[in-house]
Image (cartoon, rainbow, N blue to C red; front, side, top):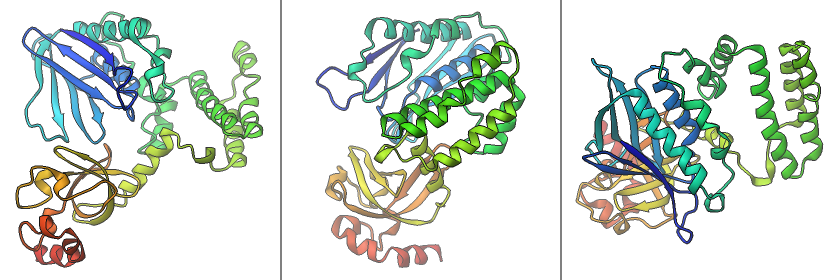
Length: 366
């Protein structure tokens, strides 16, 4: 098996797309990773999980609402079953299914990432700052594939699931990270925030947040780390700084938490209003106030639709009913067909369908 990473050409848009080619003797498949999704931290954890025999290992490659899932599962032999499955997609067939040694799978991805960074990676084609070239892939992924117990440490370093449950994440970090590791993780997070504060015109707050780490090297050298003091001081400074607003700049972490908060207000069977964000050949992505939902062609009307542009234009109002959702993964499926009083009404007069949406949904539920 061979893995290749390539970037979009200079004149192509949008910037930041990376294409992942996976080639075997029988098949070649291409996965597109978008500029709004940086797969590399997740890819590192996914590969580390395989290396540490913590299986199955699963990772979604996002394509702005639809994508594929990389799955590595153990078998009765010493081989892995490596698959690429459609996920939230109009596709219904497995793209790839092969059997391979765990070490060979890790090595194929590791070598391709290292080659890509060393020979082909061009930051000028990237849409924003990223940490791809700041990861030492040689050291992280090339050890022999022996059974370590490092997956839980990786999870703790990347937050411990704090996006789902802050208290459990804190307990996870306390269990799997040393005091020094917890301090360094806190320092890196605050360093990033300090840089953003400085860039967006808040140098005093940036200094507040970074200055109390000035004795960190001394504390580490003489082994006098006081985790409780650092955490208390950090909490107090964050309260003084207040809400992080960066003059309209939205940090990816803030966008993620906002989306999750919005998802928790939704439920299957709920009628939602939104605007068309993007029209694809197989469906429409709808902004429903903080998160994007997918309205597939088959769910637009009970009558067949060849092109969603028959019904929608960009930024148009949409009223639809939620038919499926996964809060943890941030996925929502919509239907306007289920709000049609008569099959084909969405093709004739969408506004009339929207006006009667509650009545139609109520009648269909009785």
